[in-house]
Image (cartoon, rainbow, N blue to C red; front, side):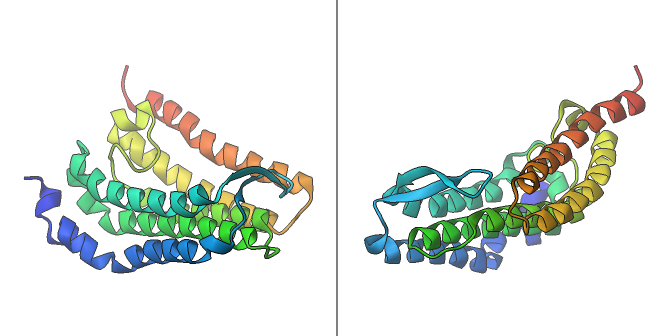
Length: 227
């Protein structure tokens, strides 16, 4: 049996027991969706363009069930990933960080779900603001914990070079952390602007903080790993 499974703090039963509030959040969002289902329109907004205008619709049954079930599926996936990862012994070394990441991802999907339903009910929320702000906050939080993520195959910046060498993994994640924090802060500021230029810059920032660590990991690998 793996060291992760033997670890008291990371045993499956213990994790589920401590996650009661996450499960309540997921089930509460689903309960809200079922409650408002009769008064939802047949077509519910499912996508907004860069200008905050609806350009995609979905059936209300799909809208009510998809995100809560996706969130529940992610919860189950997050529980079992540490138990099937070839590097599973490392999860006990960043268990607290892994927990924070899980929590914020579940809250993120719950927020998107609630905003979509509230807008569908006719309330004039600025969806583009909520989405941009939430995504930026997510990057800000992840950036703060990026340097604490230990070598594994499922969580973090997974490139051929970070997976091949633990030192490359550590250097890349320590580099990406401050980058993601800065990108998150800039994104949060830009979310308050409704002009098109702010949207373009916002997406440019997301692409930049996503790609730069990938490229960086290659050059770190070339420097660290002998030919």
